[in-house]
Length: 311
Image 1 (tube, one colour):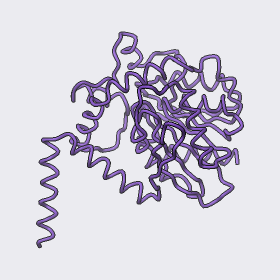
Image 2 (cartoon, one colour):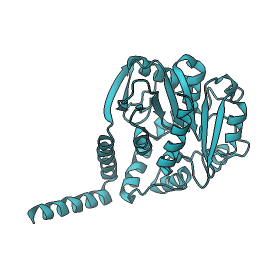
Image 3 (cartoon, helix red, strand yellow):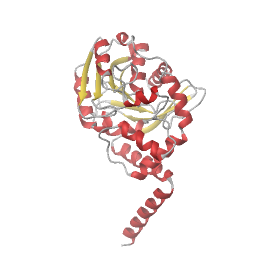
């Protein structure tokens, strides 16, 4: 009885704190993802590469001959978004999920470059530090742009490429977000809870359930990091784009896109497929910008189908 009272009391304390302090939502999110990572068999570790130390999740594979998979998140996101997708991947794969420079727990430094090629070079140094000779790069949004630059600049270390709603090419049909950018507005620049709610609607068509107080904690984090995100966007949106360069990617590539993506329009998918020498294309109907979050099992299943063809 006393234990039950204690549990109820703690829950009430969390609810009270959540309504008063957005940081409570951040704490709950971090605690939940830590537990989730542990249950899925991922260890949180760090890898130092020069003036930067990557924070990452790592799962050792059960088959030394199986490809190493490197999962790269998008702009303003973090490694935690990949966990449920990664849990669906066969345990024989070694899986690495880093926070990219300027994001998550890897940290931000105004002196660093956030252009895609610089980020790709950092990923290479991380793989070198972990003695990974070759890997499959899997990237969403900005992470897809970085993964593609990795495949161009470090072809010998790239076994294959998977891009999920990737940034980097001019869309034949501009997305809702792109139209906002053209008007001088960025949906990623958050000044209030209302701003975040509007932004969040753009990110996914089928978002998983997240309590309101946790979303408020995320909104607070966006506000705290607004100036950092502005600097990062200046680099990754304007440098090392892929129009006219996709032909340089020589490895097998799987392109996945959500048909109702409001951040990067699905019309870009055909641009990728037509310009890539070796590619497969999968469009998920009714899905938004992050298929690996909206439909983790389906996305992982399609990725593993692709991987079987390259092994």
